[in-house]
Image (cartoon, rainbow, N blue to C red; front, side, top):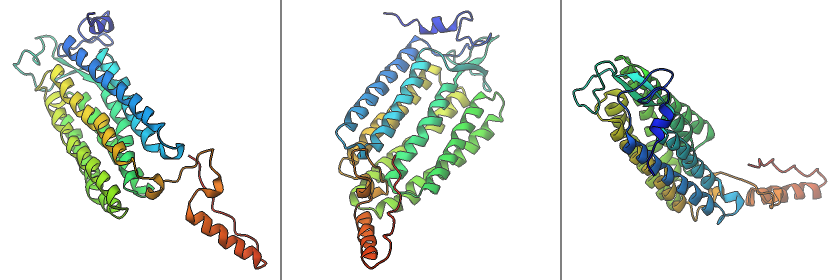
Length: 312
């Protein structure tokens, strides 16, 4: 069956039309087919990660849920791009002679998929949450790292939507934010992970280095596509698609394999299932606290209340 998504979603403005404007530099059917392929991979990974979660107790599923959420969001984004939706025409800064990126004398707009940045704005914080929870990082550092990450994504989007050379200013802001995130993941968080044991340190190091090494390639892809108009949108689709497959489903498989024998409580993550007795959550600390309270009561004092435990 032929792929007619581009024609169907460009009507009544042929040629990747949006709100009366068109892009002469846009994906072809081959690019659309590739986006559909990545959609299928992301969808399959989502079902796999959710299925694997049922092999764990409810209190141990947090990393399965986060990782499945990453690929589920990516599947929707790639479905949108495969349908030639979630994009807008933007005039290129650099007019090239290559016919694949030259446009026409009257139309030198390039198709920019803003839905890609919506995907990243939602999935990269979840990726960092997977990593930084594995390292046992404190919540203030996790939240601040996610904030800086959002600055990286938003500046990339704004730069992609700017025609003039000012886009490279946003690119520079985004790269600076990325370097801060990279330092946190590769240096600061790794120190926390090392203190939690060899298996946690090994899992974190593999997944952290894998992620940051891949993330270093995204600015290159941006500079060749949205930024510099060097490669065709079909090539852009393949470049970003391969990176996203490696950074999401493959990352998720590595992470969950590493977590197969790691209890979340070792990472400072205490989650109570409705099947569990709240008094038992917290392990030996709760038991010790209860014994101390009982001892106080036997000495004539009131039993000390057990610390509240948040159910997630």
